[in-house]
Image 1 (cartoon, rainbow, N blue to C red):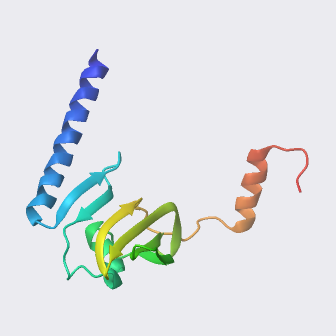
Image 2: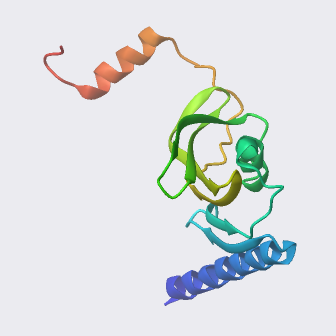
Image 3: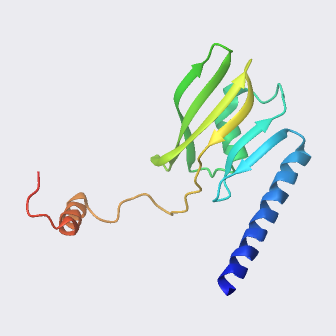
Length: 152
């Protein structure tokens, strides 16, 4: 019973926060639809047409909208334009030069203007990406944890 009350309270706070963020985006006047994932990150946005929101500026635009840090980077991995003239840019997220697995973001637009964005973005909070153990130490730990009798 106590757990259920806490869960309901947490859900209410989360919904209130999402509503606040949605209203804030709506007040800017450029957002038609905004969805967030369970972690609170923006997963989809549809924008009002705006000739200043150019698809050639997709990288800095994503960094701004997603509140990315200076160490976050979006690298273009694919660009395609379909028969309807809709261009899709697919970006991979990197943090301090290291690929963040399963974190890709797409930018869609027509006539050079960004219309929608969607994908997965993670705020990485680690101070350094420098390994603290050597490759040999890591291999030894992996082999010990595998506990196999024979290795390839």
